[in-house]
Image (tube, rainbow, N blue to C red):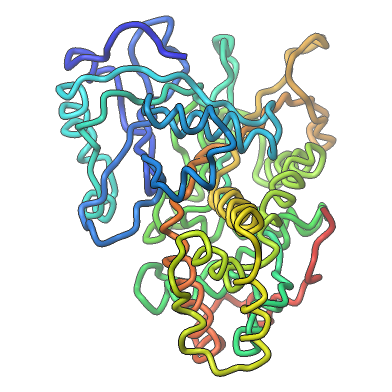
Length: 452
């Protein structure tokens, strides 16, 4: 899966900033090499604050070898420094569908290339990202992936619009291991509760109107509502690319807020490039989400977390053979009885439950890229699915891919548990007191389990 040759300092000028997540920085190719055209490079980052848990797994601990050892390709990939690629192909594609996951190819990179790229993109990166992390210039490889904001071999003059959606968790948990004190989790989405904490901490300027239960609802009306809410508060959940360039949405951070003028400009650009007005575009996107069924696969994968972190954390302590820090201070007799049963499970069951939890964590954190282009008149022969937009009497081809499918480190289980408690405690103490958008005055009391 390697490509021949090494990217050197002279190649750095051909790569520009496209965006970034917690673990990787994405570069877009602007040069003329046929093998790189229409591709992006995913470069690993390192956190500047070493006390923070790593956002993705780079090497396997002895406990991770226990967890993933039944997939030899994963264990082997760690030695070859291509774990992200192997995890996408051998784990996530089994759940999300091989036709929606692209592992990419590994390319070798020199230290000079990475150092120069870091310098070149510095001014394009959000300040808070620069403060938090830098490119890992000790890496000797990066991942080359098709740019899913474009169609490969897009004919000249043909326009492509792509949407990136970070959908977050699309269901309300119903696990018996959730304590009575935290039962609010069964009525209010994790996303909404986390928004209140982020607002309090100054990470966002206003809470989002987006309700993940709408997007995953399989109801066209509710899907449309979710898309409309993205336009008023995109945060890092929603971005639009026109012919591969970012036209709307932030650079991937909660601090991003979009000015109304930016929204107007984006709608103008969309209209210029595609001839679609905002209601048409919203309809095209909601129709595609509805028709493709792609979010159904994502929801099923997220629901592998059937114990919730409040149950799964106990199995984590089973795996690492340490006394459970959660049970240590517990006084609730009924809960203790339930947790004691979890601690008595055999190792293979503990491994399966935690493995499913971590796969679910990847599914809750990944992004979905959907790209559109108008189908040429009279053309019926295409490898892509299509949707007919009634309002403009036009057929659009689309493709849908999941990105950011990194394996989550096992050691992050403790972080997940602490963050979960922090989010819920804050919401139960302060939730409804905070200013929130008009449409969020009521709790998310949509069906507790959505249809898959």
